[in-house]
Length: 169
Image (cartoon, rainbow, N blue to C red; front, side, top):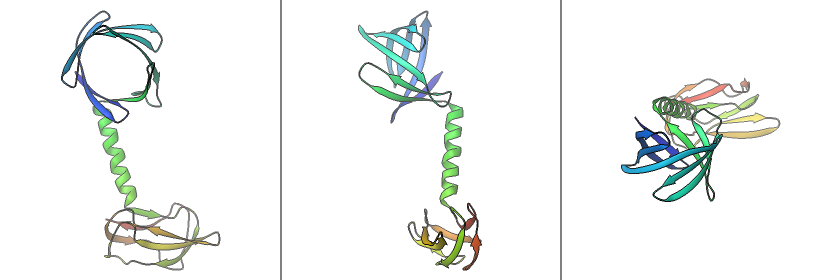
């Protein structure tokens, strides 16, 4: 079974072809390797490939499929990309896109001015609403282009922190 493994910004397709004790045959991005891998101590491995020796330290990351990988000269952030990880990334990306469509108040304040109306086509970076909080006025801009579908406040309204003000679709 092939897995995608991401090292820093590079993603490689890794497939374990055969294993006999410490001896493994693997394919990495369609290139096959014959390696001898020995666990020296917990989280530390000695790898011999084509007469070259490598010592690798694997340190578990914040999630079960992430690791810090240290060699003598380099350090990498590694992530195993399986079906579950791909699904999680797609959900996170979807949530990120949804967050870009919503403008909410970061703290309690008062709506000073609204510069758009329902149905307006807005562009990324366009100021849509101005709030006054703690004697300061803050402009809130569109984080994505689209059409204003909801205005949940009007000028002069007092708002709470995390309250949705405008929705763009």
